[in-house]
Image (cartoon, rainbow, N blue to C red; front, side, top):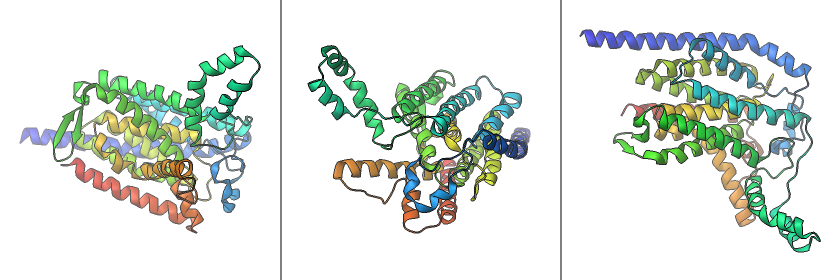
Amino acid sequence: MEISNGVNILNHSILNTTLVFVIFSGLAAFIGAPLLIRLLERFKIKRTFEVGSSKGIGHRAEKTGTPIMGGLIIVITILVVTVIFNWDSRFTYVPIGVMCFAAILGAWDDILNVFGKKRRIRSWQRTLKLIKVHKSILYRSYLVLTLPWTIFRNTFHIFSPQPSRGVLPHEKILLQITAGAITAWWIVFKLGEEWLYVWIPFNGEIFLGYWMLPIIIFIVVFFANAVNISDGLDGLSGGALISAFGGLAVLSYLQGSLPFSILNATVIGALIAYVYFNIKPARFQMGDVGSLAMGSLFAVMMLAQNRLMLIPFFGFIFLLEIFSVILQTFWRYGLGRRLFKMAPLHHHLEFYGWSEEKIVTRFWLINLFMVIIGLWLAMH
């Protein structure tokens, strides 16, 4: 009886603390958001219509001039609250470090997209032609030696074929792999040997050993880009992230992990405030600074809480969105035609006449429903 009472007291304490941090971080972000909006407007960090793959949709022009980098309010709130109240050398410093690393990458991309010049890369076909016809043997030798790099960067460029002002896809991938490697090192070598086992619902767990290293790197890179791709309609990614981190908060409560509970609660509070200002018509947009940071943090927390198998449920909408882009790319380059009117999926639905509000609210509900299924599985 005494043990049972002790467990109940501990669970009550974690739940109470979790709710306190949702409220606290939410209020902090609500207070800071108007100031951030003014700063973004003052420095003219705003969306330009000609940048982005959605410019073919007529009403998207209405979003021209909306401040971007609104995700800073999420990142800053999480960083400050965690450093002051929840800085744990074992459990929170690496997730926050990975989040900040991804946020810096995203911020640089956002700034270049506003103030930078368009950047183009030479195709590998053009490179092969230059190898054959260029007069300089030294330059031809250089092109031959760097051909693998040319093929590498062009491979990722097919997912974003428009000329970009920002960080190019292959550059993003390399930096995201670095973030994934940091995460893999932390989980495999710092959290303990139990993280070499993957939990399976209804069936216990399986041992993956050091195969976890490439799996972790892939998941961090994959979800950073999945959330980034999903951030195309006002409120879409922010609302879906609330349900995703809500599921993580419930998991951390069930696992009795106070540091993870506080961190997930802090994220939820900051996201609630962000979505309030991001609902159509948005006062600001998340930008890569927020989407890359939140995608990376979501992946890290799913892995750190040792619930790899629940990622397809908690991040269902993000998977749906990124797979629509992957399928569209393979259909376009492999079969010579489009599978969707436009990818990602939310733009395809816009072409079919769905309103932005209809798409966003339905995607929110779908992700919430999948999170509930995931939580049910987590209890078995």
